[in-house]
Image 1 (cartoon, rainbow, N blue to C red):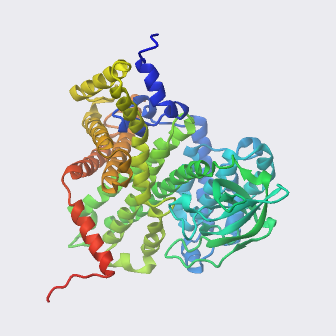
Image 2 (image 1 turned 90 degrees about the horizontal axis):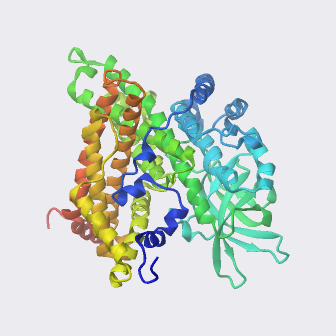
Image 3 (image 1 turned 60 degrees about the vertical axis):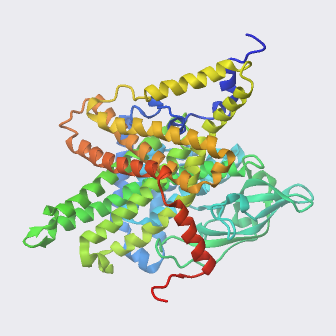
Length: 594
């Protein structure tokens, strides 16, 4: 190899050295204009043995929930009866996510998502309590804990004697995790960290006794550094819960602040590496977002069923509501959104189970799409019920209250849209940066320039296409192919235009994230149907599934066109102008007269 000329492969390795250390991602590839077909085809399918195990377990759980969980009473009394939690523990619920080598069940992400979907149909408060314990509360221990930590704490977690909670959010640090003020100072003897601070909105806060806590390690000169995760237990002393928050919904779940006052945390209770807390928090939250998405995708089916029942039984003008075109439109859209939600969640869960794919963007997409679709479905169900939907006896008002927080949980949907776009363009931006360096030294880097230009020429002539997708899905695949190419075009154009300042272009980033979201969810639907057809299902067998995909494809295409067109033709300046005017006046300032 010449010492004066870098090969394309050498520069690619330099450009993507971070990517090579990380796992591939379908959506990261999509931002770069690539269709990584093998990542999402075939649609993940559990083995017959796991399917049988899942179905048997979930049938028992469903039976228990029907007999023991009274969601209305839990909401009215703002408390889950202890016998419900004890019964769930006896069923083995609290051992679901713990590794098998520590006597847990170690179920797959697909299994866990199905569990959350089922229990959410019975009671959102119970689902939230269990999810906080099994997912974000204890997942850090399972993934990053030492052998000693796992042996010490997992037995109590799976028996239900130990209830877990996740402590990240603070009064001054919501979605901005880097701004946390909770500190951990190493004691003089070097045996403990002295923990001080306050966390808010902690699910299970009133009765949890195991906390995954994030704090900044404080140095001797009072400078704070080293964002780190800690295992903190209530028996260490200095850990207190504030009073229960009076919430709009999820009233049966516990939500309190947690105060840490000179808590002596043994140095062996550091979770993972010191200074790596942000990475740990993000990995935990990736799985938490997928769990929340699963709860929405499964739980909302009950509302769809209620809407169907009401539309079928309620008569107006001598006909059932279900015979009216505008009601049919609502029901069909609700069913198609449900289909899409479940497709995206189960695809992402299957990818996570492979442990060979980075699902950080995909999990965030699932969280946004399912929470917003759930809100739409709840609202439309109330509409189908008419006046009865506004009456508390019909329980839809509880569904409205319980589901509203989903768009805030696990990172607000606004923040997650920025996360999706910025994460999606990061590796592509690094590649373009290295191409830019090559252009400054063309004689030494001609291979890199040729590779970049040839790639652009190829993509300008022919978009990347899916391999061997069933012809019945050709119109849907064309939508995805078209908008992956356009997403790549938008990303490249604006990375070059704004460079580092792109992080401040929130209107642009939102539109890119929305494009990514509808691309991925539509891809999940395509993969689901394509795999079923390759497994022997016919078009006749899948007649109604295909109709759902057709409807969702039209929804996705409309959203994709709107967001792409809005990048070049919009009223963003007016948004900024009116918002600034409102804030400057600190009130609504527009007068009709005078």
